[in-house]
Image (cartoon, rainbow, N blue to C red; front, side):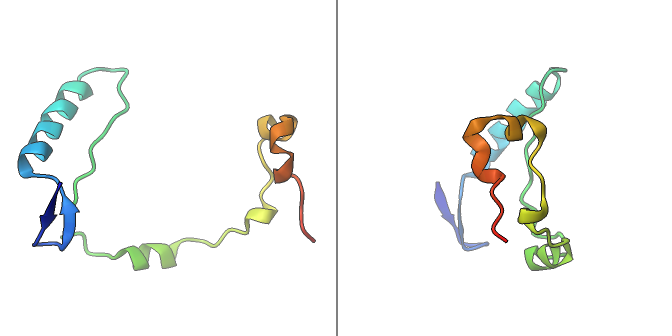
Amino acid sequence: MYWDDRHGTHSVSAEVISNMRVLMTDESNNASSSSFLLDDDSSIPFSVDEISKSMEQVELADVDPPPLLRQNSGFTFLLQRSD
């Protein structure tokens, strides 16, 4: 890893990114692969704050766990509600 002066963050070299793209292209030819590589593109016209503010707030206490978790004794803490 190295310090990216352009973005002021830790990053990897362009050579590493290039090699990752080659590997992902090779792997994408495999029908059973579900891997993908996200590009870091600072030209995207919205910020993380805008994304987080646009998301609906969910009260996790109001969400019922799926049946598989409800039936497993290791997850009983998910069923305890604080009223």
